[in-house]
Length: 228
Image (cartoon, rainbow, N blue to C red):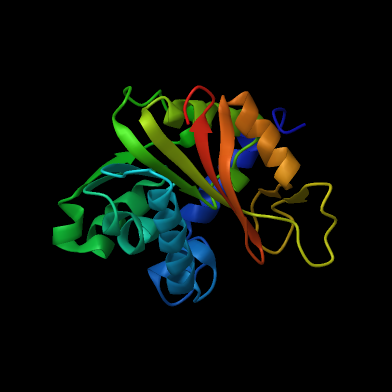
């Protein structure tokens, strides 16, 4: 069913992001829908510090589904020397260079591309790939494709970090939730369970090395099957 509706799915989501995403008073709010960006960034930094303690090292990073560059600015540039931002919407790519400022932008490269159409990254060029609140906008098939393309660039001790929403509260924890354009947000969005995510990760040749459960999210550190 996802694959049958993929064209309409991505058209609706592209239109939603081009129109400003969640809206709000700031670029950060447009990305995540509330004022919790700095708290979220602190969680990300703590997660990466935990990975450093386990032996991971970060020099070159990728922000996949970067939007305006919120995670790059608040998290990745604090631990990486260079960050490659990949974002499908040309307006947000242009805006990100202003949002980051000249000094930060000078440590970045920018690519306008859809993750479901992304070619494999060059081998052994990336220590850290960060994918946050992005896979929820992709079909299952394209989640696998995107993760394979991104993970192809990992160094031998590289890691893919995925942070996504999870079912919580009154929602059942054994099944996914799907929003459609007929709902409040006007776009397609899947909230997947832990088991659902693990299945997709495995089909992309990745396994969970570290997982943390937040109030509304799961954060995963993924490595290739043959490493770590």
